[in-house]
Image (tube, rainbow, N blue to C red; front, side, top):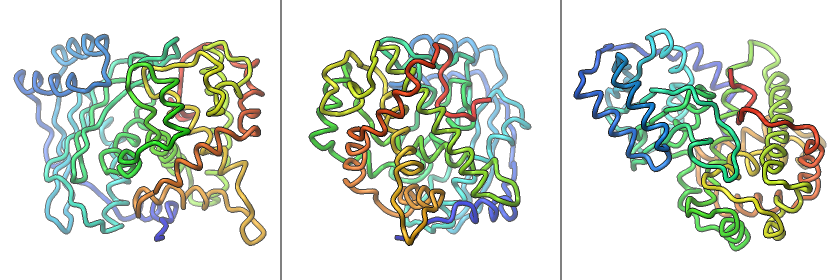
Length: 361
């Protein structure tokens, strides 16, 4: 397997890669109506957000910010459709184009769409945990998947905007497509049948994509020295934050012992259910991070946990992750050490806004 050295690639990106603004064009009223209609086609946007988004689009100046990248397949136009200033878009695009840079460097056979649309028109409604947890509570964005790289992205919640943009860009670049295509194994299918009441699915791909998104955020926090030390420090902070979020989620459903709800075979003993993919975003993602940071096995007498994570996350760019991914998830969910790690925070968490990462400012 051809693994990616994310840190080396990040430094190369910062030094060598530039993207030019070709045009910044104000949309007409008719064009704004088309943008709104495209947003509302998503099955993951609630009626509350549709109403607020309609008012915002009508009353705002919406611009098409067109950036150009020249590749082996020719010119690719990236359209950032947003009411945000050019300065704000420039801050956001650095995350987006790093992922484009990774794909261009891997010289993948799949082509990009010629015109790619990233729609960012957001409402300031923080995520929260309700019972049951719904798309109105946690969903922030969606992406349309095409056979080519660059399916359109729609972001409608302001919370954790940079991380959400990275997450959706990974979807757009088919990072988790192999997982989406998999049939769930019996353990995970049983889990899905118990907790998913509205047929939205367990969506275990979201855990892998979310893990990669928070790792990319960590990359953008490093300086010129001690990169792995800084990343590992932030990942450990992320793990503590994520374990607390798991505890907060389960506590909302009056779960005193996480082993009732996180071990696949015992899930029927609690009342946890969802109308959105919270379990994957929160519990499974946390389990994957915990397994790498706290449950890694020695290799050649030492553990490089950052490299382990790089290797695991590289697969989405370099190959297919395979059904072993599902076995790993089940093993983690059945691991008493992982469940006890959540249990330690059950009496310490309080209700409040929900953030999927520590990078939520």
